[in-house]
Length: 306
Ligand code: KPL
Image 1 (cartoon, rainbow, N blue to C red):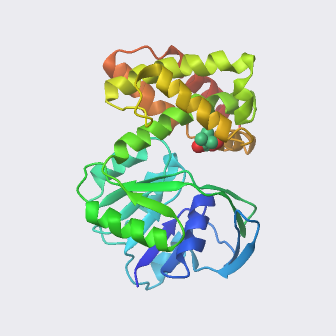
Image 2 (cartoon, rainbow, N blue to C red):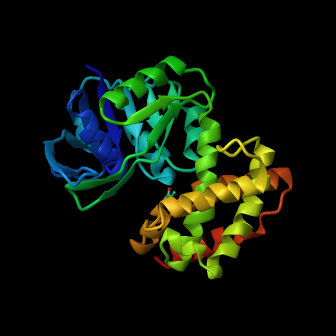
Image 3 (cartoon, rainbow, N blue to C red):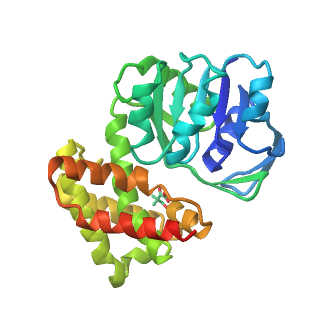
């Protein structure tokens, strides 16, 4: 039986733990102690209570667990490298990692630094926490698995199959870099604006915000073109990116985006992982990025007041 360690007990981490636990050995690892009895609420509203193996990082060092088959890192983007560092003395450096972060910050850095295989996952599974023992699986969505250098196709297939048996709709792909940037583009157009203005996604359609969305997408579209990233719809250019963003706004109209949730909880946002790679790319390619830079500065000023 393969052992899955899940580092980061956020919403996706706990959803993964609940889903994998019936058929796999699972350890859910956090910095602080969590209750072992955990409850999952399904999209249909059913509640399933399950005893999970929950460890703190310190407890791992003093336990003799068998080495994991996969370590899933499910922390926020900016915490991923430090989280991995906290485990590096207890796992062999050949251990396959699976990175579940938003944006495109942790993925290239860890891929370069970690000696073993590094898979990246991008998912539209919707989940949120309801305290120390509860997670709500709010909506089902596809998950894609691959590695940035396309060297671990068989491992991606194995993991996608395991996730499939656990109830995820998971597909191994050879273009995970494209998919991570596509999600980042949508996140960049929605998350900073809703976080700064304290609105739900659907409110971006109002005249006060629609022009701001278009201004972000104008910069993002030319940066993505320079990066060789195509919109997933197969259509080309700014209009295709704008159509995709409005489609996601429509589909998630009632959502409080993750960045708004972070701001409301006075937590650092993922601006570095979402706006950071776009701004860095714009600077490298000599492209306009005033709008993105201004959003990043506003978010930085907001975070400094937390
Ligand atoms: O992924 C999201 C997020 O909240 O981070 C979007 C697509 C914006 C949905 O809320």
